[in-house]
Image (cartoon, helix red, strand yellow):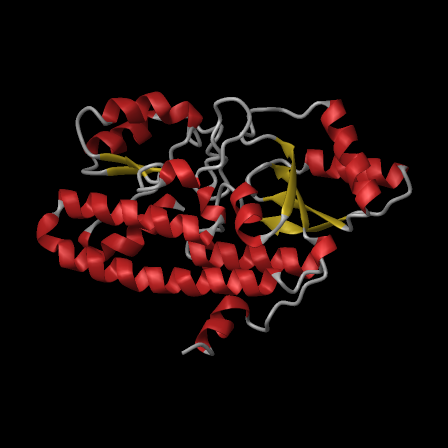
Length: 284
């Protein structure tokens, strides 16, 4: 998601290389020798921050001693007021799940590139404004689609707790089998509590994630079945990773379009034909 964001601002001014590939869990990813070499050779480094890239934190901190390094999820003005504080000292790192939050991160990218390469400031500003307009329409689309889901059905149960910003922004109740990081493995009690929640609330669907094992979600389905309640997998969501490179879902816009359409379809909402792309074409 970060590499996609930087590409939107930099355009042809930069070669943007992403280290963590699609389908890979950034919470568990450890930098390889070739990754460290790429970081050393790069001019500017961008990453999400807020401990999303937990095992790479030390490497990124070392790089910040010698070159510009920007943690896009925590580098924007008003971060303290915007961030979701979880238990203890943890802050939810998944700000891209709120399109308006990702628009804030876009500003941090633009500011960093402009500071490093000021002679092309107008180029970065133009591209930033253009992408902001697209994200503004995407935010509107997500809100419109979510509103079609019956209020009592707006409950999002997923493999891990990656959708808190989406919940706050668009009016969902969310539950994850695992916590903010996939390093925290769920125990039997965690599964049992969530199964009881599914049964009591008569939740019809739960969701798997592209970068997280589906075993814990399947355990929920089996547990609910044992209590006489049928739950289905409503689809696969992109949480900590986008879709395959070169596809629509391999962009941030495509990822969010896919996610909200999948959620709405499974929870009783209505999805416009053609999704965001067709919907956006009809807007002035």
